[in-house]
Amino acid sequence: MRTRWRATHVLAHRDGGHALLRDGEIVWEDDTIAYVGTGYDGPVDAELDLGEALVTPGLIDLDALADIDHLVLDSWAPRERGAGLLWSRNYFAHRRRHVFTPEERATVREYALVQLALHGITTYMPIASEVHSAWAEPYDELVQMAQTSRRIGLRGYLGPAYRSGVNVALPDGDRGVAFDEERGREGLRDAVRFLDHAAGLGDPLVNGVLLPCRIETLTEDLLRETAAIARRRDVPYGCTVSRAWPNGISYRSCTAPGPCGCSPAPGCWTAGSSCRTAS
Image 1: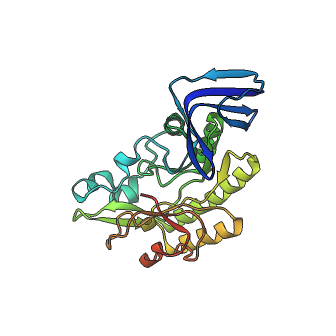
Image 2: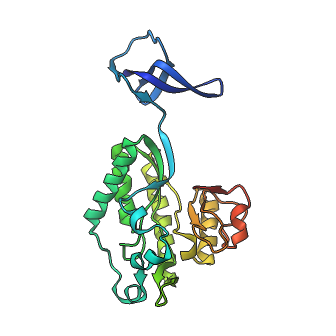
Image 3: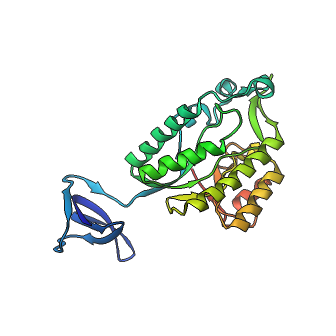
């Protein structure tokens, strides 16, 4: 089936760069774009005139908020507010639990993915809050998220987040990290399991990646094993690092295995092609 869209403005690509077309047209057949330009005179089976609109290629977001509260609950809040948004040591040791049911979490994910689509994002790699989870992201939750993402039609680079520790509020008002290293190893095993699940789908809309949590919540062993698996399986990984490192290093994300092997030595974050500034 051949379909044509018309719009007042179409963002295209011409002569090695972007070009903004006035009264542009886009024609595609099934899942392949056949024509971008003006004055198309070939046959079409269906068409839509969008009028005063800007049509662009799908946007790519490699730091996509895949929940509804990340910047509210799980960002790096200043000292005077941070303690109120963190687990206590007592909660870590005795009371941690999933605040939302799996059904509620699925609704949160679907809402967030629809918002991505409505804002023009068609390819994404997610970041989400774990503060209201019993630990990090369960395998089953990412399987459900992949189903939702496929139904909406987004291309996702997905994997359950995992960590060795969690930020906690200390009695003096400062923050520290409480560790449960076995949970980190379990999370990595689930992440590898999801790589197999994504590969088994055989769908280009679902791509398995390794997504460990923030750098200060990971052990060096877990980071090195993540890098080793990424190389062995030839998959990308995303690692949020140095969001508020004491020496002032900026927020960066490793998006592919690099020469540093994702070592937590602070000086490593600015070396090699594997690290990019995210914001």
